[in-house]
Amino acid sequence: MSATRKPPHSSSFLFFSIALSSCLLISFSHLVDCACPNPAVYWGQHGDIDEGALTQVCDSNLYKIVILKELIVRDDASFTLNLANHCGTPENLCSALEDAIKHCQQDLGIKVFISIGLDVPSPEPPSKDVTLTLAENLIENFFSNNPAVSFLSDKSIIDTKVPISVSPQCVYPDTLLDPVLRTGYVDYLWVEFFGNNPTCIYTKEKPQVFFDAWRTWVSIYYPSITVFLGLTANNKDIHRYIDSDTVKNDILPQISTSPNYGGVVIFDRYNDVKNNYTPRLCDDDNDGSFIRTLIASS
Image (cartoon, rainbow, N blue to C red; front, top):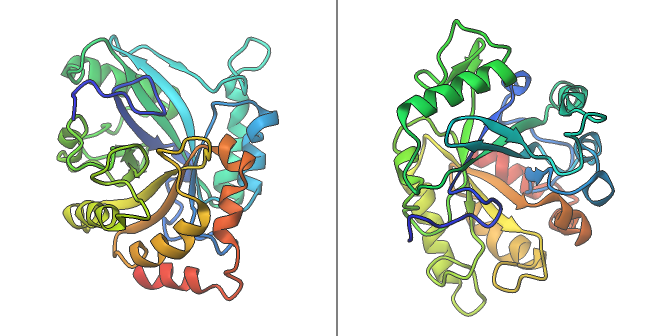
């Protein structure tokens, strides 16, 4: 894989996310009421009319993780929070999201992550100095500037562990993210099982290449990392899209038995709403059998 690949959801070469602070005491095993295999969604690149406000997303009762996309970091460790027209103007500051985030986390038990994309001119990872500056900026701006703890050395912010995730493409290894995964700091993987790579993408003709790729990811990172199946809800992209019936009936029954299976993560909320993707994954599970499978394998 080229070292300069750019993820389909970002202009950055490296993509990961961290959980915002007040959700950190929420147990990862918490399940929302909807008997649905789809716990995570990316939100923040369309307006309220297209994808709903953050409170609406959480109140939909479809997700147990919402990933805010995205915090764009430059090679000098300065950053810009880009949440489309949800916020970011003098009349509508992003600090207004604080109450919505607290509602999702504290009232509903939903984890809220903030995604971080590094927008740098070089395919090489940022220097140690830039990384430390970024950590300091994150602590100051998102974690109450508590100086008593370090950022990555013990994976702690404030007084508890900060979950960290990365979003690799489904071909193993992801050349750019493999060094990050080897640090031991990563907790969750949102593996992108969409694209046009024939060695790991699901097709009706050759489904085994997908299942082989899935088994590779979950086995290599068992038990330390929880792995999510990354899907696009954009049905106009024929090289990336897997219809919800296929996911529900042919894919999830097999991959959900993996001990470190976490669920499904949808790229993105706009297309999820437009194509009614997540509700279709939740259909026909009135007896709660899928949730029982998740609990048994957790």
